[in-house]
Amino acid sequence: MANKKLKVAAGHYHLFHRVAPTVANAKGYFAKEGLEVEISATGTDLKSLQALIKDEIDIVIDLKTPVALQARDRGEEVFLIGGFLNTYPGIFVGAKEIRSVTDLKGKKVGLREPNGVALTMSSMILKKAGMEPDGDVIFIPHTGASSFRSIAPKLDRGEIQARIAHKAYAKDFRQSGYPILADLEEYLPNGYQLRAIAAKGSFLGRSRETVVGFLAALIQGYRFMKNPENHPEMMAIIKASDLEFEQDMDQGMWEEEYPLIPGIPADGSINVAGLQVILDEEKIARRISPAMTVDRILRSEYAQEALRKVERP
Image 1 (cartoon, rainbow, N blue to C red):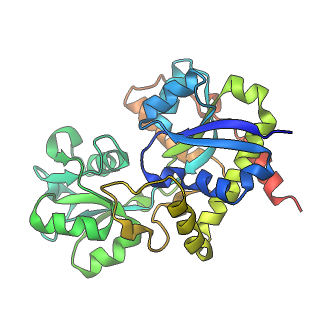
Image 2: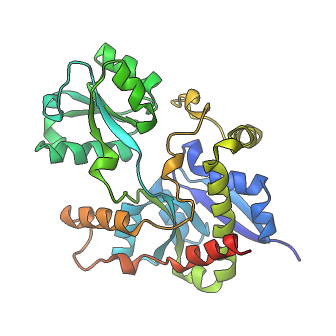
């Protein structure tokens, strides 16, 4: 019998977003589940959502949760079935002359892209300090990767005065005299469901076995990535694939464990508490209605069944 064909896509162009399914494909996890998986990237979360709604793809592997919540609130048949980035291991680092978040008034805060996670997290920190992100600071997009090697020179040259960085580089920043203005894991002790796996209800209804098989293979891909012993083989898989390092990527970030890998759930689940945090934020910002609830978008049974399948003796 021929393998079941499945079309999946990442919305983000970053290589990291497609590593898990690429690993699952190379290691034969999909084939073991009787699946032939086509992996693509749409380029944006909205394009992924539109492609999902039009049945041009079957599953989005990294849909931004506010985009999913807004779509479901509008009545779209979009559901979250598994986790991708269940927290953000990051820090907010300042230039050497900056002593507190409030010192950033009138200063420049760097971003990787105009509407990415760095904007979300920077805004959260600024608001908690009593500042208005839209007026009290100047956001500067396209300031490179979130590594020490990329950020420190820009702070020194005065191109920016603060930036979200990966927490893996906290020691490097501290030892070099840059203040850590905020630790995002302390701001968000219950996690933060940044991105998740999404599918349409109609597809879920007719393809339960396929979806469970896909998630079981992806969980194995997640676990392979999270095991440091597998790093050399993972890099060999990436280099042998059609994945390309982004032009603004600090490739040194891949020399050891990539800094966002700790945010991937080893059990493939959604962080419900972290999803609720984002839901509450969206309600406060009036981007979704007060009636919207986590239960309306969450379909956790698929990942739970996939996990049982993976861990079955």
